[in-house]
Each structure stands twice: as structure tokens, then as C-alpha cells.
Image 1 (cartoon, rainbow, N blue to C red):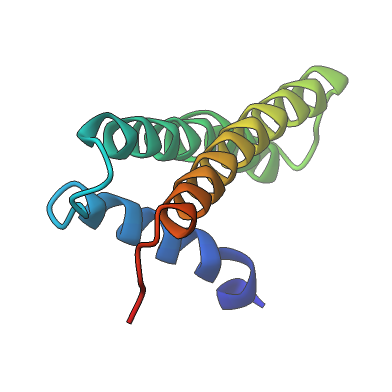
Image 2: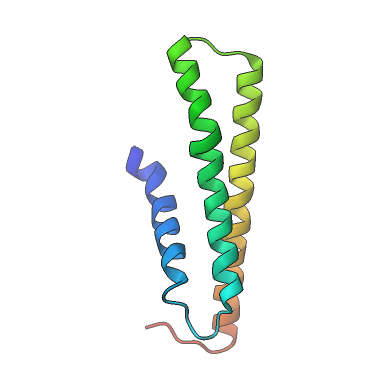
Length: 104
């Protein structure tokens, strides 16, 4: 279950991170920077904000509506980052295919 949930995002983070070093010629570097920025924001929202709330809730064995509101906000922000990241990747793929770039 863990791998099916987090596997795709781990692959995305690694592949987008490597994009800076192995950037195809037709993609401007700004796209790789923006993609990595949104991945970094997603990591911050997850491990910097949501995980501490989960840990505190587990430790105290209780939660408040404020905790749930925070978790919903962090999840919405993370989802927004994923949506922007995915839309940008689809745009890059579409422009590459439209310009005749061939994928081996």
C-alpha cells in the first residue's frame, strides 16, 4: 500500500530533479526550475507542516477541529502543487510532440 501511494510521487520527484541535469534541448531551464520548485513546496507541505500535526495527534491520541482544518489546508496546497506540476509536464510533452520531437 505504501509503495502504491507514494511510489508515483517519488518517481516524479526524482525524475524532475534529474531534469535540471539532463534537460532536453527544446525545454528552457526555467521549466525545470519551476517543476522542482513545486515539488519542493509539496515536500515542505507534507513533511514540514502535515507530518508534525499527524505526529502530535498520534502522541496525544486526540485531535481538534483546528488540527483537521490544518491538515485539509496542507493537503489542498499539496494537491495544488501536484496539479500545477502535472499540467506543466503535460504542456511540455504536448509541445514536444507538436514540434516533432521523437521519443525513443
